[in-house]
Length: 261
Ligand SMILES: [Fe+2]
Image (cartoon, rainbow, N blue to C red; front, top):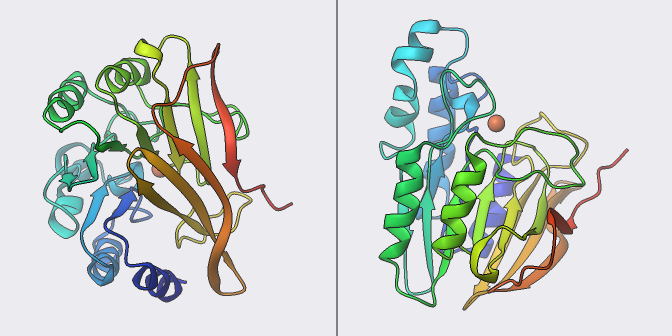
């Protein structure tokens, strides 16, 4: 499966690969070594943020003192990676916490970073945030927790004109607009959730990754689904930013893949 994913990505040769966390199952050395070997084979550049599984769970010394030291040693020293070219700007933030267990949190300092980093990005670039824990639950996914301080982060995202939020954690591929009357300035945000990349821990969906094509502030998001040993194009959703707020506060399902029963 890993080989198929690598082949598919090398065929596509994306401008950037974004991994929204959970590179390991239990943050063990051998798991990080395997993850690193995989990341090194990806087309570069790669922007990575950690997930809750990348913080040791049972080893309490590692959990509360070591925290993300293994992640930083094996995968990426930087916990607030940033990538920008002439078309896009992507900021990654670490939402995995030792104490919050699986749900994660955004700190006030990270919210300030969203504001300061995107304030320096020239206009007409697609602004993207990459975090492991989702800011909003898709209606199709049901009743799941969102990241701590999601509302504060959403306000900063709206005020700084972030167009797109990439996240993971739910193992469910989904693209949808966040229609929120509280978001300022008639701005709404596109949420793109990653499904399960190459893990065997599936939640009713085949393995997949999202392929995003950007043209100005227009985005098309295709779910690339593993079927019969090949990653093939599933549903595509098209968006044009700025996205206009309608009413209420919900995550409108645009495209995803239906769970197989
Ligand atoms: Fe997770």
